[in-house]
Image (tube, helix red, strand yellow):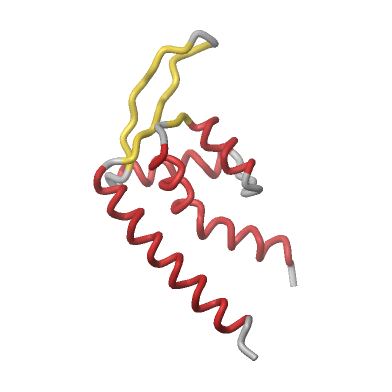
Length: 109
């Protein structure tokens, strides 16, 4: 069994939920999001993050705005939309249900 591949697949499955959760607290640009994911040991590369952000934006879950930066080119800041907040609530419930289900299997005597 390729344990690293299994772990990577598990992480990919929760990334969209994590991105919405991060943006529900504060608007952020991609580097901020990447750093927060890395702080939580959900290692993600830009090549993974940008398609997810685009997909969420196209689904109406996120919007963005450009802001000037004193340290280089303008930055694209992402914001969760009302639809994104609704989806986040649904994902949060689904996540809790999944944790309960897995816990009942793993910890069943």
